[in-house]
Length: 455
Image (spheres, rainbow, N blue to C red):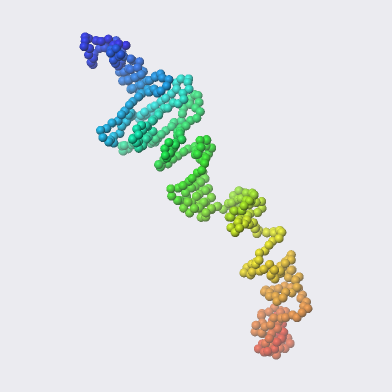
């Protein structure tokens, strides 16, 4: 729409001048015919509310409104395009910002709403399928061969408290709100999605230089499948402490009061059910309850080739393989033992400090024993040159050969028990039934009558 000129040529515009055919709020511009024109549908100043609208009427609550409705079928359309070229006369340490916003509260009233420095929204308001919609997108480009960007930040977050007494209760460097679905559906929701990073010589999808990292819910590492437990690892796992510790790795009960598993990397020890392992593998004591044994093996087939140090269990036998010849040995049980078959005794065979042979006399003594040893001795023939200690109980002895008594001197005769018989080699004039007197040279029999040794 052309604006009619006012006054006589030359025409001059100035504050207070009246423009005919204009609309209050119109922003005039020179049209194609070099005349003043207005386009209130796309450029308008709402003076009563101090609002500027570009591409449409000013929006309520907004000082500046930019509306863009480009119609293209290929290429890129920009609702707002800003070109900023930073220059300096010499090497510069200045900071350059293409767009700068600073949102603040204008008075000391408390606010329960939101203060947003930069609010970006993108929406599909038509019954169509849109391939990709970005609420915000950044691109950092190095487009000359000789240039270098030391640090490229696709997104940089900072928070500052610059006055004493000021407080920020919670700072979220990045916050992904749970989507609001009031109707319709959302198939897969990614709070944070990071594509596979392979472009650099060293690639980190997530890199934290310190602090505490908290993940609530289930987490899977190593694949994109849904996790089924709190920590679900697909692939190999390596746990390495910055320095060795007696509590390098722990698994505790839900209350955190008992160690179910602990790894001591300082002393190279593993503890199960103990907080301070003192062996390479330290197991706790069992209890009288079922399923509380410290160690249990399941019966299974023995290895085809025995391995040195291996412990195996099959049916009713335990096996251990020794170093020499990698021979598998059966472990013997000594509680109420019962041996079947042929038991081979090695030669020599040692009882206490005495070494015996398989054919030695001592072993022959017990050949054929089927009852008490005393009974066996009673049934056996007299032994050659026997020596007994203590009291020997025997039946009536009938000798078909010479019986030899032990000799004493009168001074060395034992205390004696009535009926004891022996002989002395130093009797003096022995008299029948008289008390034995020593000091002589007569050899004679002596008998203990319960009080004295008599001749």
